[in-house]
Length: 68
Image (cartoon, rainbow, N blue to C red):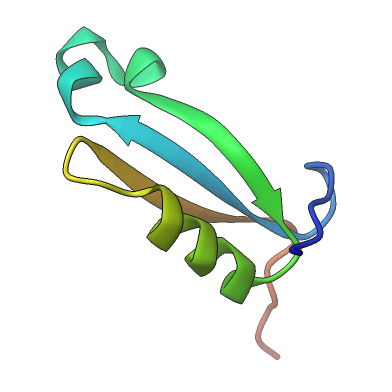
């Protein structure tokens, strides 16, 4: 079973976008589905929950690494 965690820590958040709701505005077209501690977990959710009527988007939430 995949472990979920609260948003705020470094995580990969999967959002679901209903194809039919895009004409109602961005804030209504997309909603948060789940936060995953790993990218692999987020990929699994996207494969399981995506369909021709729903598109799943993965976004990283956390500090980004910097250069030198």
